[in-house]
Image (cartoon, rainbow, N blue to C red; front, side):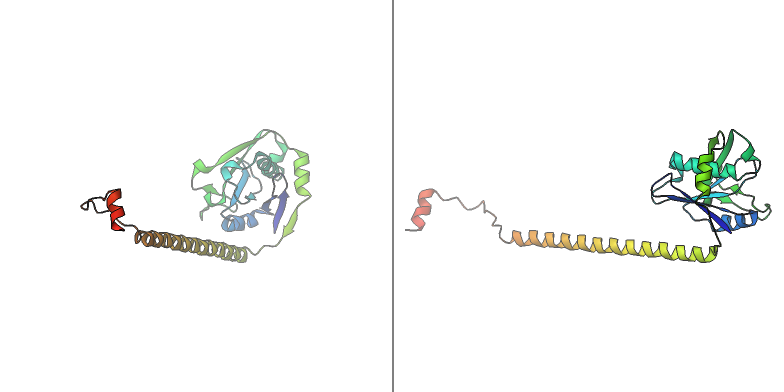
Length: 210
């Protein structure tokens, strides 16, 4: 079972989720989306909390209000951490999580330690935790099917974008050809002046018509 929360600290609202237990955490590590950010209390046991970033959001510049929501939710779901003040919550892109066969259930490390950021949590803020808990929904998730559906959707978006670019490129090429043809057509009516032929005077020009 996966627990989902909705944070209205940003607009549009963001989804935060976590596993009910360490077994479910293993599934989340495996199936987290590329746009997910993982949160955990540093050096203490806690829930693995994930933020699904909204479009255009970067993990390095998560709005402070949303960052606080995630950090408070992690603290509240740490047996030891929930009782302590002044603790640290670490977070990193989900694809930076490293899992090897010799690790215990729920244990992770990182591919790149430089991609791990920290946020200080002075104390538990009940208004935030209560607000998030009111949005909690528990769901059974078919992670494999969800991944298949996500990839299909992402591929459809990529194909549509590629088709639109191809269309725009074709229109641009057509416009350039039309412009080139127009210049070529105009050149047919350009009479080059022969410098070897003496220019006639006004009187001579008049005599031509007499």
